[in-house]
Length: 209
Image (cartoon, rainbow, N blue to C red; front, top):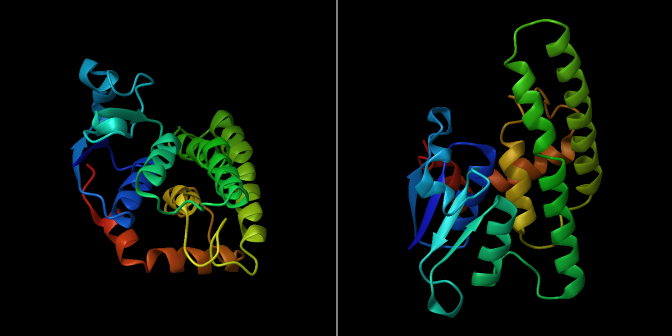
């Protein structure tokens, strides 16, 4: 059984969704980031960047335990472990990796900044920060909208990939970062398609906090 150390955040949801979709047994260990539990020595031993999520797989490579931190690295590890949600052919792998990195580098950090500035007191600093990061977040949604034109999934055909799980974790919070789907029909259809998957739904229902 995999130990999942996490909290109810977009990055945490990526992994609970992936674990459910891959049919892996796991146990949730909550790391309350509002109480700075991510700085405790026991957690830092498996996640030295003091960020959630992290996992410990007792049945890692060669049958020995392994810990993995950073949500993108966890998704890649789980895909390799199970042989699921990552194409076998090199070109397919490149496409999935591209969109996974797109999420990690932009579609996550940018809406995350939107969330931060929305919580700040009203004033010039809040207004500037919100406008800057909200503009970029909307641009990224536009990139996703174009990518999904005529496609069911972001990087693969027939079934989703770990890239879809990664992106979905943040699209799940689209209302919070104030990006309605009214002008994003392709994103809206993809979002509904993903959320209709029973395993994905379970990944969002499991208690992480």
